[in-house]
Image (cartoon, rainbow, N blue to C red; front, side):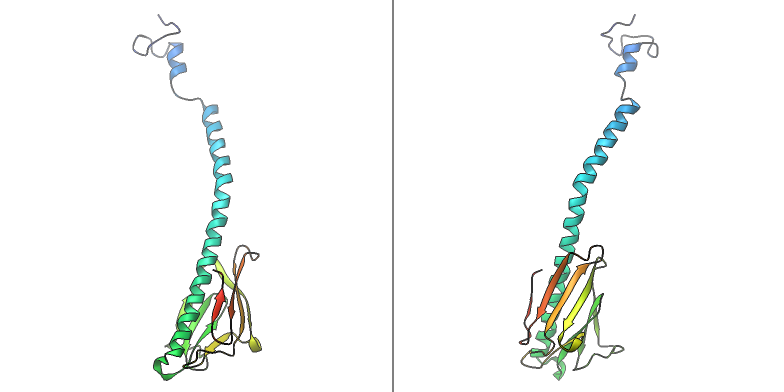
Length: 173
């Protein structure tokens, strides 16, 4: 009744036919091996992608903060509102303000939060300040120095923004 070359429809005793049982599906061991190989491949490939994503987030946030600071400088140069403009730097946000002094409760302040994976790890501005004020018309500032951004998960990955006396913002996003 059942030979080694048993086509599925030729065997009348479907569950008794040994060749039909061997031709049906995969065993548990084969499935476990396939899952194990898949997990190993995903972990080998996934970790570099995670690091690459974190690096891209840090670069984008650096470019974002540089853009915000350049925008604040442009507002000062154009004398928007007839006042100088500045940016208050904290660990997780940059706050844009009008005037020579940052006032925390001012409703005109504009908060620009950082991505949750990025923080400002170091603020090294002249006089230990955390405010950068750009002069009207010239865009110059006395708050020269650097701002260092880093990943929250890995403080060894950093990007630096330099603020020059001319008001120019340098960095490598």
